[in-house]
Length: 408
Figure (cartoon, rainbow, N blue to C red):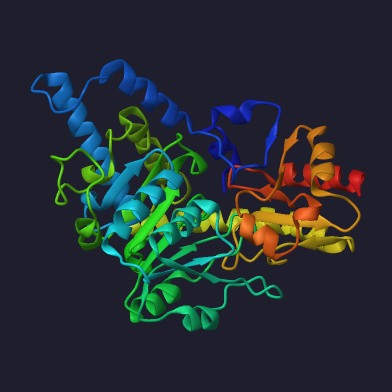
């Protein structure tokens, strides 16, 4: 991987600071910033008017949503719902889809998820919906499929699960989970926020009914997207104005519409992935788009595995440290979101000492409150989390290791 080429695409990386809190929010591509500015200068009008600037703005936004659909391999652009955050999109989904359910119907959540994919479903208990919890195995720190099967029954309407834990870093086998969920006649709603910055998302291959992630953790603006199978989106009640009906997909789930300039700026992320491919491979003839993405994200995964190995090798060598998640750097098992605790120090103390080295890491529960509670880690003030992405360098990780050596 040409790390210099990559880092040149991110203006913030020119600062004398090491960003390792990327799961909380990644740095933004220069192309994204340029597109936000460009849209506001040239196309900042309301859509749907007959005059030329409005028509052109409409075409640009239609193109942007079509490219987002292509990125995640949706069947059609109408399967893409744009919103302010994953939390908001999942809240809107829960409000709309629960109108189809009745008292006694069931939803399954996990105790490893960010609250974005927990609270909207838990709150349905007020409507008489039963919520069952798929608990992580406290020894393996894995969600076991056999435990899910015990929870599934004829009353299960939906299973909400994360693609990758924002604390454990573990990649869950969504394709296998979806197969079991669908066998039981239920739907699956996947939170891909901690996965999408690191791996290619293919919603059709996963067979997800709903899939969400946030662009501000994927090198873009504070915006999010939810994919939904078209037939499932059509069933949902409208949450927009009374004259916007069930057939108005996705507009019925975008009250007040979506943010135009931020949606347009997402094209900068998609172009960046294409540029990564051209810069590193430039093969002829050009493969189809999905193959380009697979190669690009394969390159990202390989580099990130190398980064994770440096840190994990060190953490595994310190007897007082316990890694909360897989101790292996294997990119097929985890993303480089690495959490740990120290037997003799609280997590906040460690992070505050690292702050002095101009390295940004973090401590806490990261809104995965049920996981931190399940593992009894509240007394440690949660975990120390180091969240790496592909623009981080081996020398940066080594600087963090050197800082930790001074602390421990």
